[in-house]
Image (cartoon, rainbow, N blue to C red):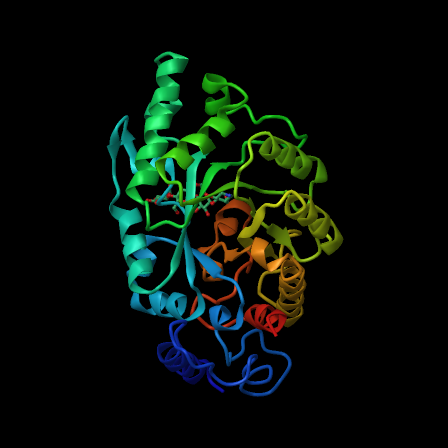
Length: 360
Ligand code: G3I
């Protein structure tokens, strides 16, 4: 069937079904393969949305501008019941100067979520890669620095109290060898700065869930253990965000399971917080082949199957780090790839089917 007609059908489908609908739509995995019933297409027509099929929240990283696009928002509304600001709740976007904040874009994301019965996961209170100039070039004393960071954390958590369900309090504080990452926060505040940041956030909102978020926790057992040891040092912490920027072949599911077990065994909630699957790490592909798309479908199926083994009380949900392939951060970082669930024209890649089938 011509793409145009298929796209229109997709659009009608999206407009009809949303996560707020109480009715399940069609079979869980929709039409077999695709409209032409050929197992060679990289897209398909779904019968069920991700958030209707899942027993836990399914999220996506968004921006205020993208949510202002009706087509984009239509797909997000249908497929997801959780959102994370990809960038607009980071310090570099909110903190204009000490004690001065720009809430506009973050508030727009919260407004979308409130209107659409969607959870908001806050990302991230402290991250060394998203610093306003006044932090990066701070010239005061360490005590003055710490006082400003405490003020910032408590102002942000209080501003979003009752609107944001959870926060990545600190993002990526640990190096691959398990040592402390030498960030501006470590330099000014010392090794137990992470614990103090969690305490300040908890003081600002006793009801918000507090997470530590990092990458390679699923592939690097030394880093995962270091994160667990750090968090044990200042429990109660609610959860860990395993970012899950992964490839089709690596890390092995057994490695991911071992890392997940480190955190579930200490009672933490687990959030697969930034899922994308690189298909072209060796840079051999110039277009998305069916073989690559199928490998991605199968990979996502095994990742979600693995997540489903986590005890229900410790499942915070899974979040995809973007909606459409062309929007992924990976493209500007590494080049051509197709890491997400939707094509640039909002068609459902068979990767989406891999996730849906894991919810069966
Ligand atoms: O908005 C400006 C635009 O006006 C300007 O023309 C353009 C060129 O300089 O930059 C645009 O800002 C970019 C922003 O993304 C929005 O697209 C920044 O340069 C760019 O650095 C920023 O990258 C983000 C990155 O974090 C750094 O903050 C990515 O979108 C985002 O996906 C990525 O997400 C991180 C998580 O927060 C933490 N885990 C790792 C993950 C990937 O790095």
